Amino acid sequence: MNVKSLDGSLCLIANYCEVHVVDIWMMKEYGVKESWTKLVSFSQSKPFDFVLPLAFSKNGDQVLLNIDDNEIVWYDLRSKRVEKAMFQCLFKAQVSVGSLVPLNDNDAMINRKVMARKRRREMVRKNRKKNTKRALASSFILFVSSASGYGTMRKPGNRNRVAAIAHIMQELYLEFYGVKDLLRFRCVSKPWCSLIDDPDFIKLQLSHSLKTSTHLSLVLRDCYLFSVAFDSPKAAQKLDNPFLDEGVGTEIWGSCNGLLALYNGGEEMALWNPSTRKSQMLSFTEMEFPRYSCLTQFIVYGLGHDPISDDYKLVQMVQLYDEEDNDSFVSEVKVYSLRTNSWRRIKDFPFYLKYRRAYGVLANNALHWVVSKRPESDTRSFVVAFDLGTEEYRVVELPDCSDQGFHMNVRSMGGSLCLISNYWKVHVVDIWVMKEYGVKESWIKLVSVDQSKFTSPFEFVLPLAFSQNGDRVLWNIDDNKFVWYDLRSKRVKKVRVEGVPSSFESEMLVESLVPLNGNGAMINRKDQGKEKQKKKNTKSPYPTFWQKHIYWIKVHGSHYSKAPTLSNLAKLSHPAQHPQAAAAAIG
Image (cartoon, rainbow, N blue to C red):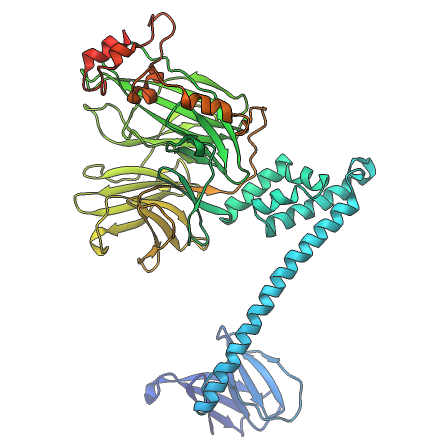
């Protein structure tokens, strides 16, 4: 008989010498006789003096045994087989666990200093390794680029070699560098410029950034535009957008693949890539709505990408309704194509837009709005999508939740459509995510937040993006602060960003190389400086309110014979306040 400790439990080894059998018992619950269980019972295939259990394997299905202090074997508890683990020699075996237990105060202090030195050395080693990788990548790119040569790329015999080199360079570019670095690399040589400007590489860079959730930023808007790095949101940086010299506020109409649709409050619209600092002015389009006795209108926009034609489209949707008949409305929809640099009208939107300043939410190559069937008689809210490829409207099936007593909104997060249900009566916010687009059963409730658990109440919350590991969600609360919401602990942590305006609208943006000069319609701000200054100094014949709105009802065709006159418009402060005067101004 012998005793041993095995994983903290007491073991009894019974060696029956006469019958050459060894039993190993284990006390599962210390001090309880009934907890003894026979762990091993095996007969000796060859004689030995003793056997000692040492430890279990990680998965617990094997036991390490010391036989006669000269052989270590694994005993499989399931198959009852023995497998040698070490060579044979004379030794004493003991199982030990590593720890940081100090022997005295001096030893503890020494151990802490040693560990601190090790951590510093490890950090230096990692940084040196990272910098070395970047340096090797740059050196290798420079070497293969110079070795291939711009002229040799055109030789048929070198095509395969050059293609392989280009593929390696692409991988290195995507792994180590952002868009700003890539733009600098364009100046190194013609092969580099050719590779970075290649449409396939531009798509590859964009796909890599979206897939890995890297090179993301937050764009904030009050009167100006600001940028905040998503991976380290510490400070806001003012953006030099194309309308910065106009002295008026800039609105964001949508975001898609690194492009922003901007509007300056007048008659100028533009698509802008903040990463490449390229912008393209959009031609203005006039509306073609019918005569109304009293016009009340609002305009919404949406920017997206059509994967079928590989074209970027800006959708402009205008709705008008007669205030004398509050339940009737008309709409007009036009689509701008970046490829053709032109507008064209499509079929009208048959639903009533619930929110007048909500641009289309992009998800799965479709723009989404919250709508109802009628302004007053049927106000039940639901979501309608506009497919950018087919240019058709469709209703999106929502999760099974009542629309009574809550404010509905939609957002896009990680490419998925999100539904925000703000139950204002009970102060609860539910956030749903559609995992598989178009499948009603794929809606899952991501978050359900009780406002009573917050230190201060809020009116609304907008989810912006997941963290890189997916365990947190960044929220915009009331357009004045950001918080991280932990999906596991259900806790909220405020994000402090320096230089952020007191009130703002926020939009996610990914860095990209998407070009805007494919149709030769690039606008050079310096060349257009004189023209802008001329427009700025020209006194408008219309009052201030109509400078921003009257161009939507410019006359043409057989409906209207003349433009609104100053004498008629001067009487108006707002058309909704004087319906007869508005009709007279138009007629």
